[in-house]
Amino acid sequence: MSPIRLPLATLALATVATLLVPGATAQKSSPEKSIVRVNATLQDYSFLRPWEKGAPTPRRGLGAVLAGNRVLVTAEMCVNATFLELEHPSSGARVPAKIAGIDYEANLAVLEPADSNSRVFEGLQPLEIEDSVRAGDTLNVWQVEDNGDGVSTDVDVLRVDVGRYFIPGSVFLLYQVKGSLQARINSFTLPVVKHGKLAGMLLSYSSKEQTAGVLPSPIIKAFLDDLDDGDYQGFPNLGIGFAQTLDETFREFTGIASREGGIFVRELAKGGSADRAGIKDGDVILSIAGRPIDSRGNYTHPDYGKLSFSHLVRGGATVGEKINLEIIRDKEPMTVEVELSRKPATDYLIDPYMFDRGPKYLIFGGLIFQELTLPYLESWGEDWTTRAPFKLVHANANPHPLEEEGREKLVFLSNVLKTPSTLGYEGINSVIVTQVNGTFIRNIKDLAAAFTAVPADGLHTIEFGDYPKVIYVDDRASRLINQQLIQYGIGQLERLE
Image (cartoon, rainbow, N blue to C red):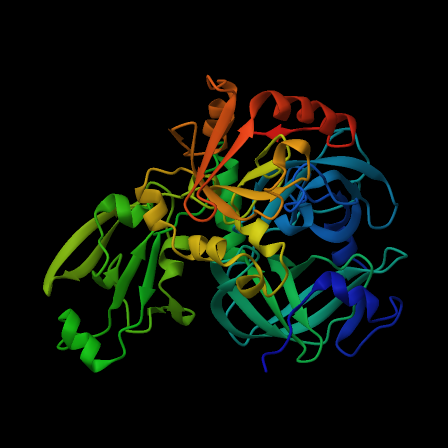
């Protein structure tokens, strides 16, 4: 059974905050001189009832002080934040904060004070970036006691790997460390240092195994460098799904039996870097940017050893950079130049994540339509792949046929409120919309436009890809019901942006 990786926030329930553990020593200078407390109020959107928001929840963490009175935290600290605040670790001076830059895929954010005259940074020293971390090094996880005293806990770097930070399917460089950490009330995110310089940000901790994942300084440095030029582009992605080529019969079939390594391209993200460069399903990639790729999808990094090829793109390159891919196509070798780009979440048929914005929806006479997103499916719980509606789960896993139909987003009827306009339709839910009044529906705006024109007979025709295939709703009755829904608690009938 795999160990459970607990977010740092859960550790606050486990330990009395004023006790020290082996390996933790009170500091008289560095920690409290270079970190600040970060207080946040978060309010998530509801995806099952898209017109609502959840209850506000507090979150506390520690941020690393950077030059220019800026503070580095994880983006997870700021998800759907309605209020952010910086607090001096010793004096308690506070100031509202604003986000100067954020990247949810890289799980990094920079905050700055809303008031430049704040006393929050008095006596604090900015941290420089330390990017020389290697396996076997000892790092220090910094925390702050309630009284403002700093605490530093030693952790050892077990290995450097590539793993998930926060967003499903988004992987980056990761330090795997081991050490005994103590929980405190502000421990949602913690700075990690080496020789007094910032080496990373703690992402997760397993109290059972005493291991943790650290977001490393090379990713932090790339994020800050990109942010500092005033035109943040983000980390590029290649946009491929691949299969390993360990099976000898498979290698013979693909024409690489006599070669070393290689990965098989089994799918492409529409509009992604590889797709735009002309890479095709069935190609075998032998090398990326001159680095040979083995049959498991790894390459040899000069400092870290074996790493996933994804780091060549998401850690070793920038948006707009051109790299060469050596490939085998139809058993013939060729070279393809790829200009790297980043495909935003909003450009996917089904958004892989949604933060700081609510789900798009439209209510018409009690029919609730939405654009499908991964967070909607995840609303069904940890076992959403088996609990969420099968056809929507299948669409998320196989978007290409739907994209080929010309859809920009996947609009579906999520639920039906019981109203006079929807009698007989109450049991319909989770069905994909194809047309309304003869208009093909590419996105939620198309749906809203289709309902604007009133048909000659006063009945709107809504067609689906599956049962019940077609339903009819009366325009006049539906618009009267819309007004009633507003009066009875649904404050907003649509969100189209």
